[in-house]
Amino acid sequence: MSRTPFELFDIDGLLSEEERAIRETVRAFVAAKVRPHLAQWYEEAAIPARELARELGGLGVLGMHLEGYGCAGTSATAYGLACLELEAGDSGLRSLVSVQGSLAMFAIHRWGSAEHKDTWLPRMATGEAIGCFGLTEPDFGSNPAGMRTRAVRDGDGWVLSGTKMWITNGSVADVAVVWAQTSEGVRGFVVPTDSEGFSAPEIKRKMSLRASVTSELVLDGVRLPGDAVFPDVRGLRGPLSCLDEARFGIVFGALGAARDCLETAIAYAGEREIFDRPLASYQLTQAKLADMTLELGKGMLLALHLGRLKDAGRLAADQVSLGKLNNVREAIAIARECRTILGAAGITLEHPVMRHANNLESVLTYEGTSEVHQLVIGRALTGESAFR
Ligand code: FAD
Image 1 (tube, helix red, strand yellow):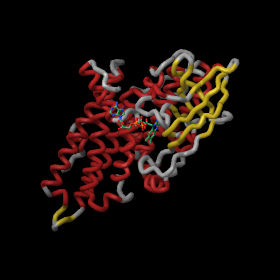
Image 2 (tube, rainbow, N blue to C red):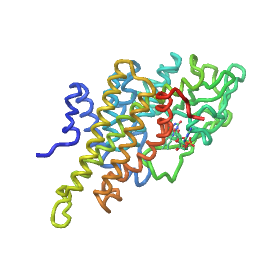
Image 3 (cartoon, rainbow, N blue to C red):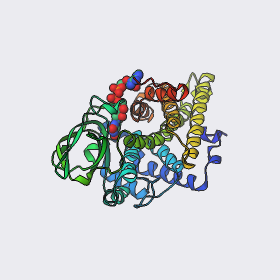
Image 4 (cartoon, protein in one colour):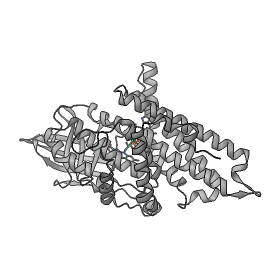
């Protein structure tokens, strides 16, 4: 009798009944509604984002860890498990949910005025409205403090000018949370995307995260009312608080992509006959599977530990960096190793492995690159900041 990697680690024994139920619901949704279409969406670089958002809203995963406004108010760990199951489908699907819930909705929930929350959160929780989060610029990714997008006061209102780059959900969003320099430091603005002067051309020819919308945001003198700004937060503390949320989801999510690759490779190795025997029966193959299972299981134990810390209100940003750095790095290594087990078949969209591997290249880069997380951990260990 064989056991799956997570069974071998008895991961289920570490989850509550409710957490297992949420995981099963999301897994069933991905299997029924998403998985059959993924290869086509990826190949065509086109996803039915609006339809998907409504279905994900119906499933209850949009802003699921937030309280009120139609959000489910689950634990952070349950949210992480949902991210894992979504990313076992495709990192693009998890990105849609992460950006909606952890970046755009979280920003409004944490920093928005009562009116921002009432206007946007209920519609975002159902998926009727899609959000995006504009922090990165063409010349400022790892160092957002240098951003050039500027908001200046104009009478009672504001005028926003600048360009944001690599923005997930940008072209399909109804609302953009945009971070800009002001005379009082960086501030966040809630920008309806039908505002005059706002446009969001889609970025084409991506080789990674093809089943996800990525866009530029162009703010050409966008006029906003005075109350469009987040009232109580100034400086990078605002956007960084949101990034911590999204990074937490990735700690779990990346393992979903890795698990899908590993399960695919195990199944393939069991069926593929080479030199008259199943590939799975060779010691070299078993060594690969054993090593990958160890990394997957260790990553899951780390994710669950961080989840429990977050649920206890004790998770620090540098601890999220431990999880993001390790789990994405190991996930991409697992995806590449699984590809070798599938041989030539591994390079096609008939199997999910290379799709996951390519997606994980983006996951490695966004929400803080591996190098940025190494620097965060290095600073925590030495007290020395090596960022510049
Ligand atoms: P750079 O900052 O130019 O980095 C280039 C290289 O330099 C990297 O390897 C980096 O690790 C390294 N580096 C940086 N600093 C140091 C240092 N001090 N020492 C040594 N090496 C260093 N952004 C958003 O705001 N919203 C989104 O929704 C969003 N979605 C995205 C979706 C996709 C598919 C992708 C690919 C990106 C997305 N991003 C988004 C942008 C993402 O956050 C940035 O790409 C990321 O922060 C890195 O910035 P950069 O690409 O400009 O790389």
